[in-house]
Image 1 (spheres, rainbow, N blue to C red):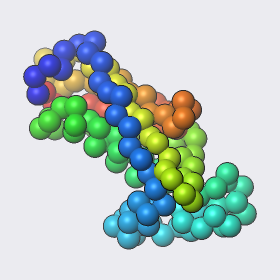
Image 2 (tube, rainbow, N blue to C red; image 1 turned 30 degrees about the vertical axis):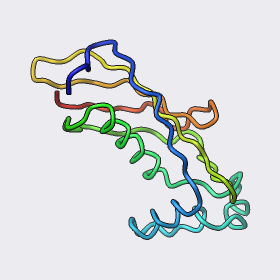
Image 3 (cartoon, rainbow, N blue to C red; image 1 turned 180 degrees about the vertical axis):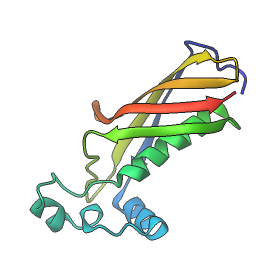
Length: 133
């Protein structure tokens, strides 16, 4: 995990999320809420369209951390869902994950400051990630 020094900039890493990804995630997670697959239902409940699962979005943050850090242990990962990730019927939503490395504590823990956006809009608020160096 070399190169992770305090203040180092991480990313950006961008992931395409398609409706097919949402179907696959629903099968893997057991979360078959129709707002993640059915446009009509999503609109009927006041959403702007089909939205990605919040936990899928957070999982992509974990994936970015893995890409940045290699084999670092993720000790803590969390966030608040502050805006929906609308996934179009054709094409993809693009989730971008950026970060900055914080100071390393005496016990080898490193806090990462994160920003997760779609089209420039923050979709995860107060993201928190701690890794063990």
